[in-house]
Image (cartoon, rainbow, N blue to C red; front, side, top):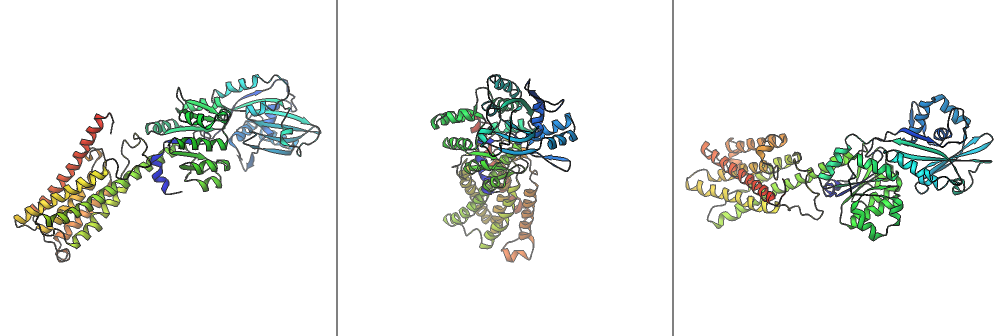
Length: 552
């Protein structure tokens, strides 16, 4: 959405991501139910827990599809499959909804009110801890333990409570309605991880990027999913929103780099996590879909909104929109961002080296007693044709093999870092010295010296653009023809240069003379020499990296 995000992606050190739909398939399926014994059963053959699942939701039917929150859709589908769609519809009519207290992130639950035998049945659904603290009476101590067993299997666990009122409490404060509840049972749903997510997580770690999962699920559920996908390792921390709330800023700053999973976290706490990581000089990407996620997305260095489930507000404040809501796509975007930045650096390296060579050639020739080597028309030709066509084709260069084995780029790193500045200087000077050498030699041999200087500089630049396609990999190994647009642009430039030399109508325009085969081969020989000089630079860099224990 914002072009600057492409460059920023290469510096990302942390990705804070939602779980549902991003790391998982967002295809919920009800697998476990634990109805509470001795609860009333208003419907023959159906537990109160099943009735609660059938009634307490915001799912709507559109043609043959159920639309709504995937968790609620999974429960409704389970009821329809266990009984029948007709039975489900009958329940909606029999237990008509007469009121509702929608879900919010502070209460972590929702309540619906239904007509029931001349009274009103209030059904509350939500996070286990939220329901437990709203239950009346004793004997509730085992509920969190039962939920933890289900959560340890990677299930999202919801608890249900109920209360029967003599009259409709829709006008009462929600806190009064949602207290002294009776426990109805637990429901566990599984949302399988995406097939490609484990590889994407591994690739992140190899690239020096630390993925962090932030979810509203139970701590045990989050831990189980984190281990399944390879995000959570031994010694790394899982922290709940409650534990986070008890930490002061100093404690959070000390622990934030060790925490890989956050469970039951509020939107305000998401913002605090981003700030804590940024205070540690990390570059943070944050995903989000809801309106409440907007502050943390805006604060993050890269805010990533969900394209499918994201709201208009989150999309508006984001830097990127993830069209398929898939974490693996973020990793691909980071790889693409690194590739684009590498190609920008290659373009700068190519253009500035070529321009430097021209400057050195024109500047040094008079100082060593040689005539002006290039005419203005030659310089114009080199800048318009030799520089532009191959330079633009460099943008299509594929990612290097080690691109996701490199650590993130530092945000304050210069465009001329990693030896690019030195390369521009020494290769530009080498190109100029070789060209001036050809000038001096061809003058002494009474050859077409000015056309040879012009052609030598052009061919040397074409050889240079091939050599810099990779900073570390030899072109013999990478393949001369693996970048087809570059091959075609170099071939076209080569043919145009031959046309400038050999076409009679071009000679007076460009002040050139047809070269003999010997003269042409000499110009090509200089280009080949320069190509191998740049390849030698790669060999030296690889040797230096090997001594430092690095692998290029």
